[in-house]
Image 1 (cartoon, rainbow, N blue to C red):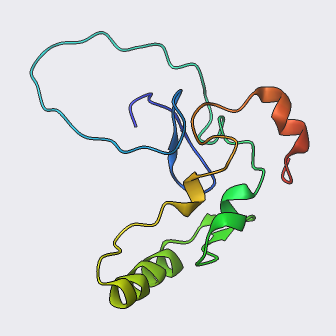
Image 2: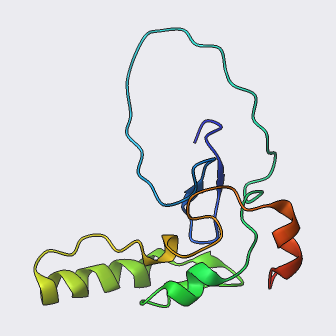
Length: 114
């Protein structure tokens, strides 16, 4: 994601404003200087606390492997058939430490994964 943030265990992007958001694209020929990336690893901002997995109604987030897209997609398809309007869920992105900011590094000590 071009330095916007690192992934969470639910495969969302955790930015400085958190994981609960959406992205859009703009195509331009404007030359821009790259911002400094304050992280190195793919999951640096995720504290691996497991709250996203607990929130997932499809049980699509495995704490050993991360999000499995197939069960998530099947849940969304089912909910679309039941409600006739559900095409997104987002329950894995609410009431989690990374919902609206990057979790403090000290929170890592409480994580269920090391």
